[in-house]
Image (cartoon, rainbow, N blue to C red; front, side, top):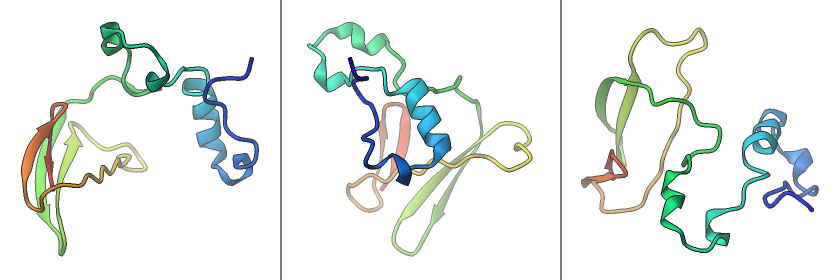
Length: 108
């Protein structure tokens, strides 16, 4: 039986090899939540495949850019030798509005 979320061989050559390793280790074998019958215990599963422990926030800074605002969360402590990894979350909504989503305060 094929993995439920196997990478389509047609796009495999176009993907970063590091991502392919990550996908095959943490994602390929999982059944996507939308394909499962509803069960409230799904909330007990890890939400992000391959995720690490939650880092404590060292600082939170807001920056106004020309067409949007961003909020930057930086972990405590010294950055790794190559700097902190970056996760950018784009989300639609009312420009300039703040609200909370899953514990994150988001600026639109």
